[in-house]
Image 1 (cartoon, rainbow, N blue to C red):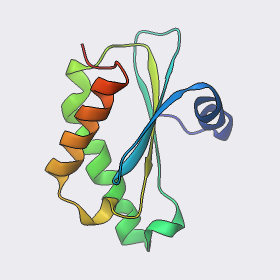
Image 2: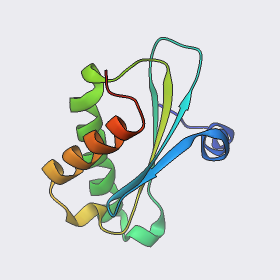
Image 3: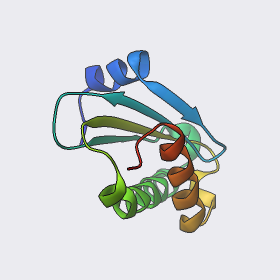
Length: 106
């Protein structure tokens, strides 16, 4: 997991992005044999319950997709206002579509 602000800033500045109504995904290639993921949820999304739900559905979708992803990427997923209100299967299908578009799927 990513947890340093400078790591997030580097991915925002140098990475490729893909935007949907549910989330924004940023991807940056790095030298490593594992993927690093960071999830951002701001207070604009809502109270703590909504922010935690947004993080949970994003984490679960990533967990299901992880075996089919190429290795050596830093991935940052930024939740948007609709994230806590959509079904988890919608987040999964949207994430799969965006990761395919960004070249992460094998």
